[in-house]
Image 1 (cartoon, rainbow, N blue to C red):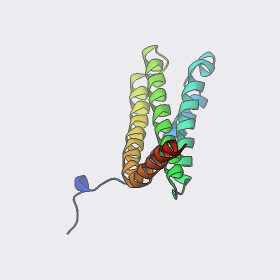
Image 2 (tube, rainbow, N blue to C red; image 1 turned 135 degrees about the vertical axis):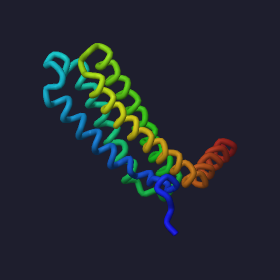
Image 3 (cartoon, rainbow, N blue to C red; image 1 turned 120 degrees about the vertical axis):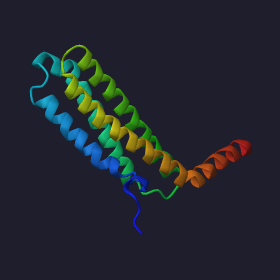
Length: 150
């Protein structure tokens, strides 16, 4: 018996595919003349930086092979930072729309893609928190016992 599409869990690492799409779309927008030349350095550069940083954090976090609590903590931190970069990008895109630099349709699509990427990143973070909880509990208890012995 097959599982209905709506009942299937989505793989958390789809965030990589959405992040790649978002990064490519952003590159095309900020490079392709969507923004007037003066605004490319004021707003477009900041949007690009946030999206590129989010993508880099997602790729780097995914590359960490978790074997220790420190690995898990580093991976979770990168996932949180990626989510923060995506938050900032959505805010900047919204500001560009409000001041008239980009149309409502373009802003809706762009923020929609960023939000979808962010939702996948949040699901990935939640899944990793569950998966690495035993390691992280050990890290905290080891840290507390080190303080008691010092």
